[in-house]
Length: 114
Image 1: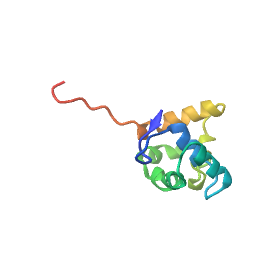
Image 2: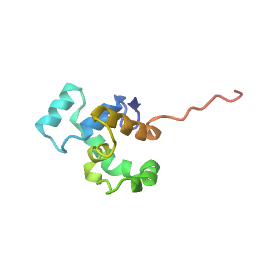
Image 3: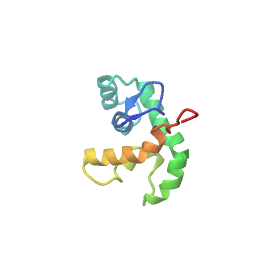
């Protein structure tokens, strides 16, 4: 599953989630992940800002945030949200990506006359 809402390049959804869940700021761990996956630090910072600001304003989050108790902290996104999904690491990540699908998948439109 890929995402299209976090910049011009397309990254796998799990890359966006896991890289964004790293501690904020220029840390050695974040730098290592960015370098290994060829994700520029500026892109990582933009993704984190998206989680903290833009994601919180999406209709999806506005409709679903009350389902998470205790509330998910904006500063803890996406890691705190990932922790709310049941299953092992891969299963929980898959469930989170399915949850985010309405934000990342463009609606199919058919050409006129079909």
